[in-house]
Length: 274
Length: 245
Image (cartoon, rainbow over all chains, first blue to last red; front, top):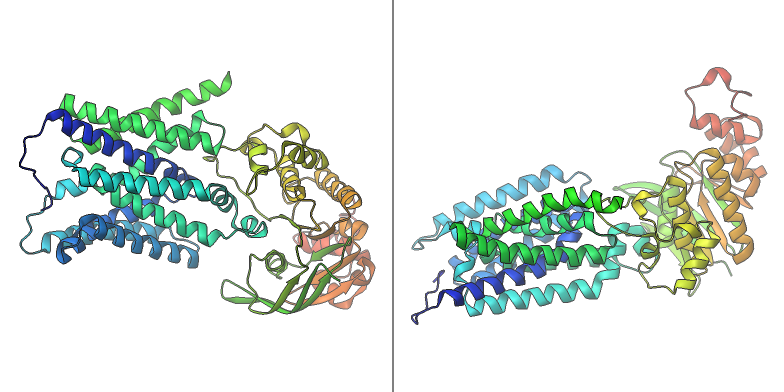
């Protein structure tokens, strides 16, 4: 039930097209959110939330819920818990580290404890983009559009709250609401990205394209668009590379993103010097 | 009617009571400075007035449609966030190019419009923050240690700019400051805090108040005293040596 196999014969390029669309959808959703994860120094936050996805898988399998629903619920709960904790405590670094790794370990244990399920852990840890179904695609693109709409709607307020919460309040904003919106967006991205890159690498897809775009840009909007482009190139190129070299797709996508990051980090200062 | 009024205001910060029994009113056009030792509740009071800190008890009342310009104590723009000065001034509301130009000119940094925020010097950064606070022709300008990190000449220039702004816009100015020489020269009123309002009035009244002297010592006119309070490692030259500073 986790790896739905359709009975009709499938063309390789149909697999390829679905995989490409899935990768693009996730890149589109992750990129602008990834910018905020970087600007607000929420990297561990992304880690903890995406690692909690495995717990969501366990929950879904145990209760016969759709996987995406289980992951969405658990990711949202995890993100809310972290959000609340980081408001109360000044130093959350260690706490986030504990949560990130504990969520992963507990999720792994929970999945293997489930009776009667021979779960392909690899697929959840590293993603299995080559087996996305049309239904998966609908979920991924539905999620991507929802996240992009949230980001576009709240963009100015999110930026202001990111600069300084007090400044946002003084100009009539509500930083807590913006934090909640980011939390919700993060949970959606985790839920739709799980199948594509897996729990271990979702955070990478959030952070690396945005970080790669940084040295080449002069505005927040430029960085978000750059992150989308770099994310898309990584997804498509990584997919291609995984066919060519017979490597796992999720890690191939992230590897390509990391290479682009390195190139941008070197090129950025040179371009700025012109 | 006053622009901002507090009644029996008490504030908590980090679960602790930092300020109590504040009955304060800010009137149109006046410059009021808040002084007090570290942890005396100065920033908390400003944050409560702008709405960023909820009162533990008591009330903060702002005049209807009050336009507020706020310069927070610390604003660090993460180096990962690319942002020009102009883009910064367009947050959270998009502004006309002419409005931004005017605000930058008033703050004396018209030439910085296209610079990246991360590359500004301390003084430039503070002036850009001031420009942002001036965007909507505020009725009240609230500054929280706006000259922190500036050298004395920079701080003096900054305060001259504030006075010019007040003269042009007629806005009230409420600021937290450690530069007592400025307080004495430029304020209409001084509010001395130490967990509560320990004294208030014209700069001279406050400087002569026993509560103030108990906090800051009894140097000449208060200026030296505050200075000594800030630099209490240097007792050997209490009188005179710091005057030049």
